[in-house]
Image 1: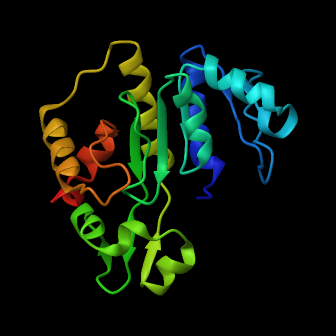
Image 2: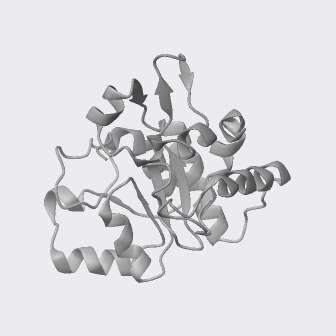
Length: 207
């Protein structure tokens, strides 16, 4: 579930450019944020964290950008939209009606290519829960890029502000993804959407 905070910095800068604040949350973080030279970037997790502060921020934020960690479920309690970047396993994502999801790509060392969602969800790959398990299966997890996280952050902000227009092809890809989910998957029949730019860029994964 760990991922690099540096891949989220472009998304933070985008939020600043929109006039907002970027507040880094978390109960256990490995290192402080790099200095972005703007007081509206608040390293709350490193300098100010409290139990009350967590709940207050979850309730009051516009949306949260996270990863595959339990912190995502704090904002959901208050009906605040969340983005799950670096999502893994593919079939275990948030379930809010306004949430967005972009999964970690899974590389097959034997095939020398990324696995499609069908290959992941119609095998036991979807249930692997550790880097060791992926390694034993001959697979490698990649993190989402800064560009991918920025794109899904921009999409969420535009959706909330009523500016976002869905592409027809992206709608079709969403349908393909959800058709692959089965009752055994933890988030079967959830309304969550794959980030649109991610879907269009990686359309081959939906085949």
